[in-house]
Amino acid sequence: MADHQSVLILDFGGQYTQLIARRIRECHVFSEVVPWNIPVEEIRRRSPAGMILSGGPASVHDLEAPCCDPAVFSLGIPVLGICYGMQLTAHLLGGRVEKAREREYGRITVSLTGESALTHGIKTESPCWMSHTWQVAECPPGFRSIAASASCPVAAMACEEKQLYGVQFHPEVTHTEEGTLLLRNFLFGICRCAGDWTMAAFAETAIQRIQAEVGPEGTVLLALSGGVDSSVAAALIYRAIGSRLACVFVDHGLLRRGESEEVCRVFSQLFPVRFVRADASKRFFEDLKGVTDPEAKRHIVGRDFIDVFREEAARLGRLDHFAQGTIYPDVIESGQGTNAAVIKSHHNVGGLPAQLGFTSLIEPLRMLFKDEVRALGESLGLPAGLVWRQPFPGPGLAIRVIGEVTPEKVKIVQDSDAIFREEMAKAGLDRQVSQYFTVLTGVHSVGVMGDERTYDYVIGLRAVTTDDFMTADWARLPYDLLAVVSARIVNEVPHAGRVVLDITTKPPASVEWE
Image (cartoon, rainbow, N blue to C red; front, side, top):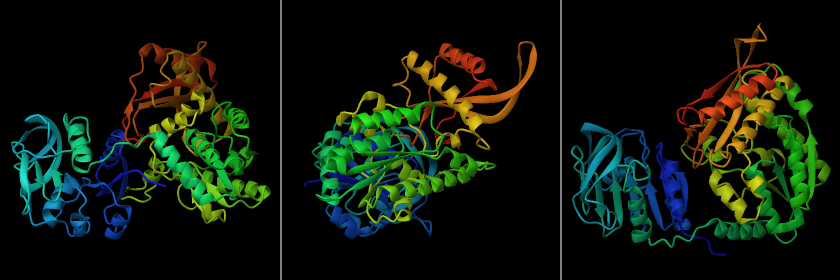
């Protein structure tokens, strides 16, 4: 079973690290973000076509600055350092890094000062995105400067003989006009990548891996939420092992309106496997009573999910392997496997299989971003209605109800969200906007209905556009659409008295409110 070429991205804590991974995958080359201190032996074992050292907030002169093993530059594998990654390359190989006399932030014109395979075909001058206080003052032996800005004499450097390169700017962001060409030069001109990584190819490889891990007689138990990720994971595993897959769907009562019934209908038609729906809404609402802290809510939902799942799994009898639909943003936001901080807990990341008594875990989507999961679902022949279903958090509406969660509050969110989704579909925006939903803010405001004073809930509208859900911009929805949504929610949803629009990007906000 042959694997496709890959590029490893050593993560030094840069804010654009995941964006680098996305840009490489857009070139049909598989990329993976790994910790900066990955052992050299592990790099050799993986045999990547190339390596990229990401940016980061530290100075190479800090005593506790992250520093990879210098041996990574002697493996014969092409290396591209970006921002901090370039400075670290210079520092470790005998160059000099100093604080810049003038810091550079934003779009800066960079001029080429020498020819290089890295900059082949790039214009002599072009805008690049800079974000640095420190910079390379003197190239290491064997390197030469190949680009400069007005304040940065070494904006890019190259050692063609050893295929080692560095750029002070960020080629992965759209503000760097020639950034994609530079990355393609590195991938195809220097690393000699084939560019043959597609979702169809990924599916074929993933199916072979599942078959090899499960074996000809093994069985798999899948934790099914009914969302896009777990549904695509189910389709992939079913394609690999057929009816030896069993699915347990834990209905916690925190789903969108009609979603539980839809999940049961779709899976009874698509997958002739053992399917169990566990209605545990009463337990979840009871345990969430009086709880207002969002992380506490997440942990309670995760704990109860495990308990209910364990009970249902026991009724099914012992199965060999455990599977779940974990995707890459879940892993990153939970701080697993990279230098990322824990942004929020995901109950499907970490200890769930161990708590259920399983020692073997199958996560076929673990390295995919959301849009890649959708593309995989389409390549597997899943219906568009399932593949393009709105993303939904594991804790469900518990984190879209700010404050204590009650059945009454959840119904307000269900009804307002259904109106929002219906109007988005009517406007033809349901596939153009990446995610949209309503939030019960927990705030009350004064209003007037039928000449009487009201004091009802404020409903928040959240709609974002994004490629990977690691960063997101707020969607510019038409005013006429917002007017209809607002009017319908206030008129049709009891105890909804005001509607507001969230126009915050990620970062600094997350997509969800909690």
